[in-house]
Image 1 (tube, rainbow, N blue to C red):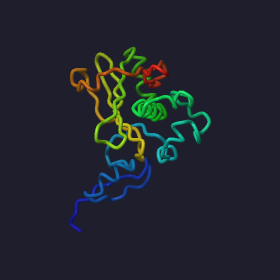
Image 2: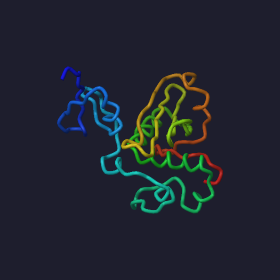
Image 3: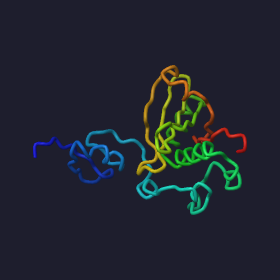
Length: 184
């Protein structure tokens, strides 16, 4: 009583639920949509809730049709940082954002991309896709209910921190993010 509740929908099209100010972060973490917020593309519910572990990364237990950037024999030779890059690319490629950047690339041409592990964040990775006049940065959190989300976007490349402009990946014609690792 007396708290100012904010309304969220657990999924698009579902009834709204009142959420207290202390629980808003938890609602966002679980992919709930805040009332009045424009929706962005998200991974469908079943895939979104699935956690990925080392077995998934190595190709075991992966559903048919779910493609990976690298095959299992190559994955065994990669460092931890390179494995994190491959996992982030796979999660990004399985999200609806792949189509988004693929569509933008059709208009703006070839993009530059980077995949950077974030320090202090539990396995989180920043994926940055940039053109001369626009850039998008996504946060990839493998253990999150919503593993890929739009973090920031902008127009000028000089708005980006230098660590995110170490272009170590590229986009293919269909928007597929591929890390540039020598052994791939």
